[in-house]
Image (cartoon, rainbow, N blue to C red; front, side, top):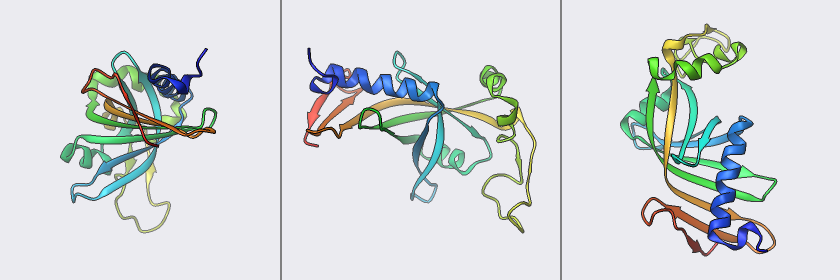
Length: 181
């Protein structure tokens, strides 16, 4: 029997297995966006949900954050996950929809109380403050948002004994291609 990294189907199955498992474990991933000035931005965020059937990943954020401004100007993002257990780097390019209000109340209700304080910082995230603790945190569902990231392209690099790289895209019905690593 083949190892998962020896076939495109096996690689794609492993990619989605690792994304879903990482989301179930609230793994940290890197989220890359383009600022309103056209500059690259990368930050660490928590991957909250992954769904292979809809090819979507979800990340929670504060509507007042700079990433929202960036995504409103350029609604595309890149998500990077390194999975140490499988020696697999996964890069996902995605179209991002910003969801808020009544459509995300179910997710807000599922956020633990101790985590809700991350959504509702005053002054807003990124604002200049006179010292490092001159802000307050009050849970506020009105500023809670979900970034619904619809995958359009996935690049997977396996860094085992023999490196392998595969790309999967909406174009071509996700069939995939091998690439030089």
